[in-house]
Length: 318
Image (tube, rainbow, N blue to C red; front, side):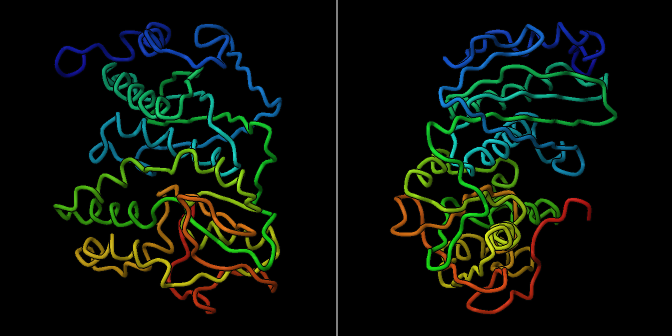
């Protein structure tokens, strides 16, 4: 037994544990076959399926001395849902694979699943299947599916000169939250929490697509890094205006000062906020704010017409 007399994953076994995790869950109308068979069946009216997958590894993407399993579950769903949103689609279903040491308390796996279900509930989506395996550490792998609803997908390669760049959501919060945790700085609870559980602007991906967004991505590796994908994919220069980031800089300034870092650096290069950033040919829709422009030239991302000399963003293998 785990601490407190709770059964472990080894004691329960794979299928009894899976039964626990899916018991009493309600699926959306699109799911005609959910967990319990060899595969799920999901109806997507559009006829096309947007698919993405992402993985969280303990010690690399989360720490269980910082995050509760519930928070890890919410984060795992949120970062995948943001990728679906960035294509202009609506997240509809998720498949989850979870690896953990055999002596992990079953209650902690249950808490992880509860966090996931809370997050998918905000989307009107469902968790339709997955896998449970033994692993030396926690590994959470999520595959997300989305429905375009008749819209064309919004790619990174569609930005054109003369358009504006706009963002939905907030920037820099997760990055400063990470530093506050890493440097063991007390207080700033809201910022610390934003690192544990991001807040993507759900629904704004479809709003952007309906408003004619030419290119879009979510801010997972840092604004400059992610806009760099659009700039290179589209063959354009993206020129950001530093004044447009004043609300974000102000929001993280106190935490950044406590961590002894430049708040603008956190806004421009900090990842895992999962805001959406897109290029629009005209007026941006409600919920979006303009942060720059697009022009012809050798692909690049600039700040006030100049190269940013600070950090560019997250690197997966650094």
